[in-house]
Length: 255
Image (cartoon, rainbow, N blue to C red; front, top):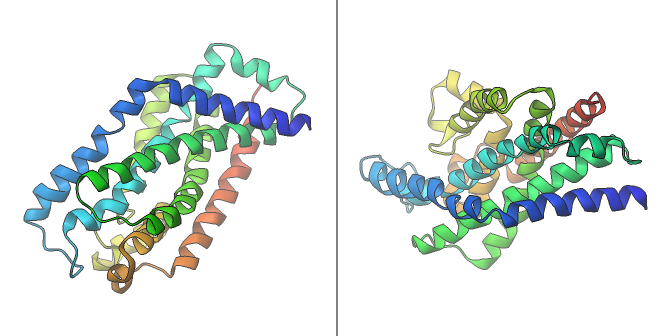
């Protein structure tokens, strides 16, 4: 019962802290909006779309959702540094709750926040006229949440080793950009040169983006699909488990 209460308390704290930060919620509209408008409409006017029946904006829409999940999830690791600087983390670490529960509470709380950011992108898609039916939206939600688990775990693990916000920001950017640009968010991976395809296929984010494109774009995406949906989800699930184990170990070493 103590473990469950500790997990719920940490989850609720992370969600409440996010929902009370109205500036971050409002600002979260602008980055995906720029990508969808500038890249989707601007660059899309000169880019040959590889998927018949889809505009470039529709093609990158699932990728922009993946980008939002990636950047938000990784940024959430900064909460570990804040909590350590303000002394909250010390109080949590001495609580009669296992480090696994502590990590899981923060991780799922931050994943919930990232999921909300992803939902905001869906709202933007509707506003921009990208056709999204309720069934597609509901089917994408659990996949989006699954993607965030491993990404948040990376952010929390990195933050547990960092001593300052500046160090975390530098490492975060170094990891974020390759994960994003090699994920196939902006272009189909099968159309890339062989050596880039190899790099993309070892990127776990590629399988998350491919799963989102399979669900959101439907049959139009099938010819360029990286893997069947169940393989994408299996790869992302294994990646999540590995990162949760590493993240729990990182929290265990914290004092």
